[in-house]
Length: 287
Length: 176
Image (cartoon, rainbow over all chains, first blue to last red; front, side):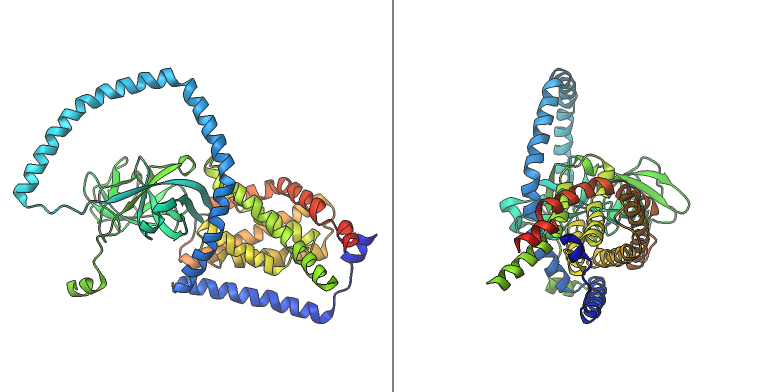
């Protein structure tokens, strides 16, 4: 009886008008936010950082029991497969031993050749290991949240994030001890790449599906199904030669590629700190 | 003293829907079972907004939808404002539907939810396409819509439990 009384209480007319104005006002604010985001003003990143600062530790807290369960499951599975895994590793080890001597000889030869050609090496990159604590996004966006811990002050926006197979994305937001990574598959992702075989350049763009599009390729580019695309290093934002994707289809209209990672299996990633962009004053002088 | 008590009680009632939705969202952020899991993360928002708006309009308003939109945008790396405006549209549609139809019957309620979700998802697709000036692929959009629609009863069960446990009307008015 009491429930009915409350639910069917007649609303004040003035209050109702005010309410509809409030909805209209909120719509206007949302539209304004979209516009501000589009023209990329600093305010939006400030708001994003603030909210990210609050939510990321919460996600970490909730993810702890799930992590423990996942760890337990993986350990059990590993114990069950220990014999088979041992055999596989023994075989792999033998193959690697053969490769090791070859690699040593090549490395020495490379060093001599570089010296002869006065080759300038790229600066050494520093890398930091981080744990994936959440995978986010929907049909329109793809991102990860990683825990950086005390290394957070060393991480900047734009740094490359890789796993054992290759590039997975770039740092988008760093706030507190956490960072958000925009994955290669996200519609905002645009990576300058080069074909490892033919050295033809292009831009690899995400479109929120598991297939990436290769655009801005030369007209007579020699690209084939199965070719590996690696970072070109053009623009200075990413280190060169990191594997990114493998070409899936080469059509007349479009070229598609598949990333080398599966978002659902990412646990530990590496953030590569690569800073070769010149300071503002130097950049002006260079122009 | 009584006014202050009423104020905090009112605030608590408004916080319960928000916290219940965010709890489910945060929970779905963790496990990474398969590729389609990504499309599932927006479902608690839709189910929550629809459920709380239609069943407990006194505990849910447009400001809550707005705040949820901000969190959805930041967590999902979507352009800030896209999910806010989408949730406000969804809120407005569900408000309209619940005032014209009998939402007390679950089958009707679910059907109306599917309709409201479809309209909102199409709107969102259009909005994102305009934002990026490119037509976004429709396959994940449709898949996301199907998942949201199919899992509505599951999420609703949780929200019903929260409503009964924390802010059931009879209990609330007896206390105040």
